[in-house]
Length: 94
Image 1 (cartoon, one colour):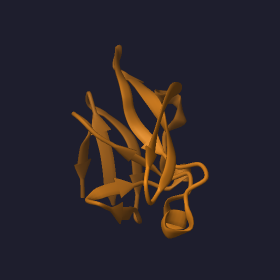
Image 2 (image 1 turned 45 degrees about the horizontal axis):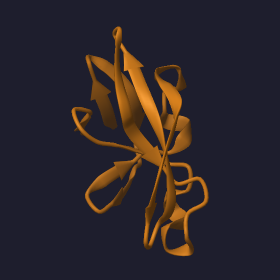
Image 3 (image 1 turned 90 degrees about the vertical axis):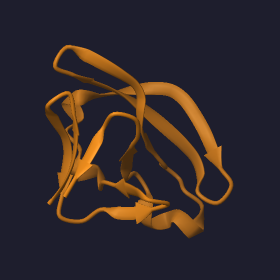
Image 4 (image 1 turned 180 degrees about the horizontal axis):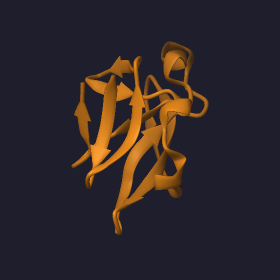
């Protein structure tokens, strides 16, 4: 089981993640949505497409733009559609 953990809280866990460029992308059903809120941040990757972001709030603290996803990826990244990846102090444990 792979888990994304921050501030002592399990944000996501799954038996299967997609690994792209060293990042674990968790399937949408593996995310504990109560910790996530929409961000207006967007970025674009040349081969994956436009990414949206989430803020994470857990144990009374907020980590801004700490998770990202591709709602409509380019064909080369179709396997990560709506999957969520993390950066910064979010720890990925296997």
